[in-house]
Image (cartoon, rainbow, N blue to C red):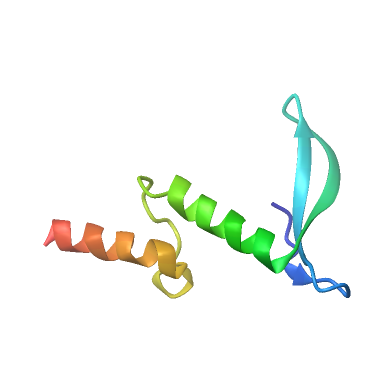
Length: 78
């Protein structure tokens, strides 16, 4: 993903900036614009899809839906 953070648009949508790649080569930049409801659904689907993957974000920046997975992994190691 590019260095641009997710940002609010003037129309109240969220813009998620992406790099489009085709056949492994960079093609263009684009912004995925989502309503709040669409962003919530995407967030939930991503958390669900990542449920079995290790948490790779630092503790202070791990989303709530994934933070319990970090706690579960720590408890298993103890």
